[in-house]
Length: 525
Image 1 (cartoon, one colour):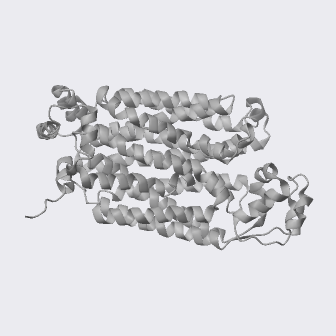
Image 2 (tube, one colour):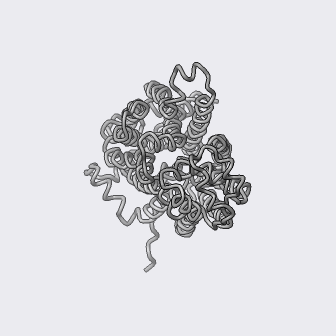
C-alpha cells in the first residue's frame, strides 16, 4: 500500500471514529430505560423525551454546523464535537435529577452533527475510487459502537446482579445505569486526542484561498501527478459560487432548479432512512425483545445479536458499495427492509396473550399476584388489549413495573419468526441504506454548497429520527408493536417508489461528473 493510500485510510479512520462514539452514545441508553423510568418516575412521553433528547439536540447543532465548517474548518468543528460528547457523557452519568439528565442528553445531541461533518471531510479527502469505502467507514464505526454499547450494557447488567463485593463497593449494583452511560467518557476523550493528528480538508483550504496548503494536504492522500488536476477541478467548482460566498447564498442554491433532482433524492434518503424505524429498534432494543416475551436479562443478551449482525452486514455493505453500485443497493435494501418488517408484523399480528394458573403462581415478584386470577385463561389478541387488562387489574404503576415479566409469561407467538424478521431488518439496513446514504451525501452535492447542503439534509434526517425515538414508547402503548412496525414499512414503500424514479448511479464518478448526471434534462424545443 502506498504512503498516500495509507494516509487516506488513516485520516478517514480517525474521523470515522466519530461514528463509533455516536454509536456508543446512542445505544448505551437502550439499557437504561427501565432504570430511568424507576429512578425519575417517568411516563411514556417523558421516557421518549429522555431517549430522543439527543436527536432534538442535533437539530439545533445542524442550524449552525454549516456556518461552523465553513468558518473554522471541518477539523476544528469535529474537535468541538468530540469535546461536547465528553461533557455530555459526564453530565448524563452524574445527573442528580431528570431535567439535568435531559439537558446532558440534549447537549450530547449537539455532537451528533459530527456524523455529517465526518461524511463531508472524508468525501473531500478521499480519491473518487476509494470514496465509497472510506465514507462507509462511518457506518461501520457506528455499528461497532452500537455493538460495543450493547455488550457494555450486558456486562454491567451481569455485574450488577452478581452480588460480588467489588460491585457493591463501586456502587454498580445501585447505580447501574450511571456506569453504563459513564463508559462513554473514555471513548470521547480518545477521539478528541486523535483528531489532533488529521490535516484540514483541502476543500476548506481552497475556500479560504490557502492553495499551497491544499496542495500539501492532497499530496498526502493522492499521487503527486494528480494534485494539479484536483486543484483545477476544485477551482472550477468554486467559481460557480460567484461573488457571493455567504451561507445564505449557498442555502438558496439548494432550492434552485439545477439541484431539483438532487433535492428530491437527498430529501427522500434523509426521511426514509430514519422512517425505517432503525433507531427505535436500536435505542430500545431490550424493550423490543421484551415484547417477544423475553425477560429483562434475556432481552439484554439478545440485544447483543443486533450488534453482531450490524457489524457483519455493515462490513458486507462496505465491500459491495463500490462493486454493485449505489442505486441497486439502496433500492434492493429498501425492498428487503419492507419484507423484513412485514414478517415482524405478521408474527405480532397473529400473537395472543394469556395467563395460566401456573403463570400467576410463578409471578412471585408481583405483590398481590392473586389479583391476576380474574385474567386466568382469558385470551387477548394483541399486546395492547393485554396491557390494558393488566392496568385495570393491577393499576398503571404496578402494571408498568412488571410488564416485562407478565408479557414473558403470557405471550403466545412465533418468537423465532419475529426474531428472524428483526435481525433480517437490521441486516438489510446496515448493509444498504444505512451506509449508502452517507456515501451519496458525500457525492451528490456540488463543492459550491456542500458545506451547507449536507447539514441541511442531515437536519431533515435528524427531525425524522427524533420523532421516531420520542414517540416509539407511546406507539408501543397505544398502537402495539405490530402496527408500529407496519407503519414503518408503509413509509419505506413510499420512499422506494420515489427513489426508483429519481436515484441515479454515482459509482466511480468525480463530484463534477455526478453534478452533470443529476442535472435536470432540458426540454426539447
